[in-house]
Image: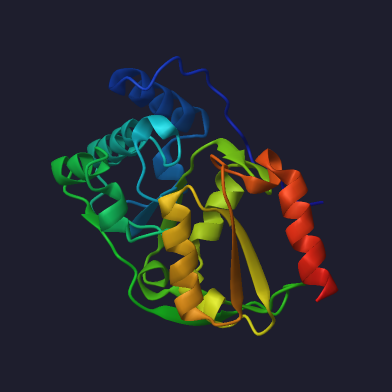
Length: 238
């Protein structure tokens, strides 16, 4: 039988620093202490959810207070080799965190923000759908990755949590380049960030076809399902 992981659930009434810090401290103590999980001499990568540059109140990225208080806790426990990075859906780590408050916490606690530069092919023969992944060189150089995920809704997976956050460890640019079959993006034409991301993917791979749906705030498939259905029907019939 597979060994089950221990999960700690604690109520947190706000993102005030001291409340977040206290809950992180209690949670880690209930797990036996951070020292029991990660050795102090290890190099550690903090991996928040940095999907794209967005206002904190939009609840798109990991809240700065969570990142900052975890960084504070790690420094107080004596951990020295700390850095932070994500394979962002749109932009780079340093661009996405700028002005969010995360950048100020990193400066305060002396933590480096890393922009991934190179993908390394890693084989995974046990995989069912995929036998290899392209992972960032900077991530593979670390001894430990700590996921600082964001609990939020997701158009395809319904929710995004810790497991989904690990998807951001994959170098998306290389994954997009490897697509050999035609792929269609159906996105809202009213959201500039979506448009920019789709165009960046299109530059990486000419197999990507983009169709825009207007008058949608976020998800065309939910806000204008008839139009999306019509687009899909037309593409399948061609």
